[in-house]
Length: 194
Image (tube, rainbow, N blue to C red; front, top):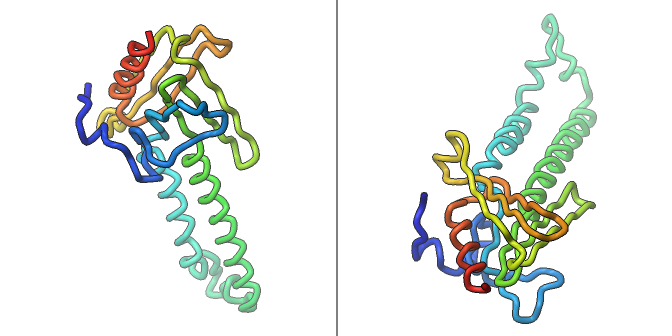
């Protein structure tokens, strides 16, 4: 279990942080006037490595196209006119850019907020659909955190499960950094309110 340190608990300015304590210049719709964001969480950065490696692989594939499409000395790729090769490259990289953009937006805007009054889970699915779930801190009944697997243990990320007495009886913060610290901060906030 990690310990809360001064390094962990200083206001965060980095807009790409996965664990942002008291983030500066962060607000959200329906925020009360005296409500402060204590934690802004995203999935740990290491969870992005898979799609980044895939994007890198697909970025370099066109460099090997001439050798991939050669049959018996004649190359299908080389038989295409330059403008058609250019169009193929443009379509390929446009699709790849769309993939990268969608994955980044999905990571960046899927956030978990802990304020001094409530917890909020904002889920974006694609670019056009958003689901927001929230629960008041006073309605939280149980908090559980878990880290499972080598990567989660090594990079210190895991899931935080929050059971509430609200309409939505369980909120899940998935693959967040420092789950033990998040658990401690959330427990302290609940204790302060009660």
